[in-house]
Amino acid sequence: MRAGALYSAMGALLLTTLSAAPAGGLPTTPGTPGSASAGAARAGVALAAARAAAQGIAFGKCSDAQELPGSMECGTVGVPLDYARPNGKQIELTVSRVGATHRDPHNSKHRVPRKGALVFNPGGPGGSGLYFPLVGLLPEWKRIGAAYDLVGYDPRGVGRSAPLSCQDPKNFFKGPSQAPVHPSESYKRERIAEAKAYARGCAERSGDGLAHYNSINNARDLDVLRAALGEKRLTFMGASYGTYFGAVYATLFPSHVRRMVFDAAVNPDPERIWYRNNLDQSMAFESRWTDFREWVAKHDKVYRLGDTPEKVLASYERARARLAAEPAGGKVGPAQLQSAFLQAGYYDDYWPHRAQALSDYLKGDPKELIAQAGPVTEAAAESENSAAVYTAVECNDGPWPTDWKVWDRDNTRLARVAPFETWDNVWANLPCAYWPAARQKPVDVRTAPGELPPTLILAAERDAAAPYDGALEMHRRLSGSVLVTERDSGTHGIAGGPNPCVNGHVEAYLLEDRVPVRQAACTGHVEPAAGSAKKK
Image (cartoon, rainbow, N blue to C red):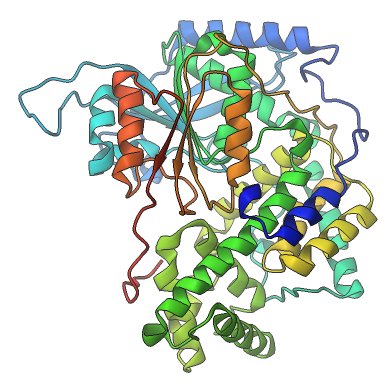
């Protein structure tokens, strides 16, 4: 997923030749819009929402295991596993809340009136939003926290909400491991076997319910949560993947929307859900990887990794080769190195940390690289759960190529110009080629003029995980939406960050119901300072 204007000419031409995911495949999941049971699912949502509105959420002290501050309240809301059978199996979503403080951070004598609940989803799929209400403690969020109850939750399958699992968490962290940029045929066969086994594991550990973990049901769950909170209309902020099912919600329930913020908007075009979006993303990370290397080269006096992006790449490749021969601390091999530096593609505040760790390692001190790239075994269960939900939702959401030759052809071509992330992206998504559950037909995200209140779309121009083209497509499809662009920046998710211009637009929208007339641009935030590394 990457903005077209930022592709190399070769890359742009290449992506137009890659195969689209096949329109056929396994049958449509019951409850998919347009399927025979879509009407039953609509009725099921209405019934579940009515029940939730009547019952509300019994918020109380959060469990000790969650280790949340005293101001945080927790509760649950029940939703049907299958909305076409609303009286069938129910699952509970865990919800967290910090009530509106009513305190104006700029005027202690002014009591701020409550505007309702602001529900947040951090993306993924597979991300937990349970800790979101704690952002109200940060200066950038205090004005919003004064007017809104800040509400987070674990979506279905995540964390404390009927968690999914596809393998024993003890086996989740594998390493040290290789990550060949140009994999051999034997290596590909190994990864294909792993993908097939993983898909089988998802089915064996989840049973018949596996097909019901998808974006349409995430949107339906959001409407039930809205009702349970006592909100006639929803105020929602979604980041990354959260923008996609938020847009699905806006399409299915436009009259239930009050305000929506789409931060780091994902391309919602049904033709790109999700195979082609992942091809776009691999191309985008190549550009962001170059941005990082250019920054390191500018600070060669600090890191001594090379004074050109090419020399920095050579230093990185030297580290890869050394780790392939002898993993650092017996934990960090090439795959762990690549994963750590991929994070620098998401957030530029990682840049000093990663550059310093690489510099130290090449000078003979692996301590920081092990700390930053080594597996956090204490988080194995959480990481395995997140990966399981990611896989289930993406595989269920739409058709994927089921012939390995399609994947191999498309990504071999792509890796010639975008080697940094291409094959690792393949291995993350390849279980979808062998997925045992029925697939969705993706929702045609689209609203007519006047159907939806004004919505706010935020995008960093060089975001690799959610390329800028996605924000443009979201803007085209949601009538009346307004796009705010952070120029020449690539941080994945910009609301509440270091850019006061972006934050000003968010506050004006949520607190004063004001949006720019058409589109707005903010100058990019300042790049991180070299030598400012702390452990990340």
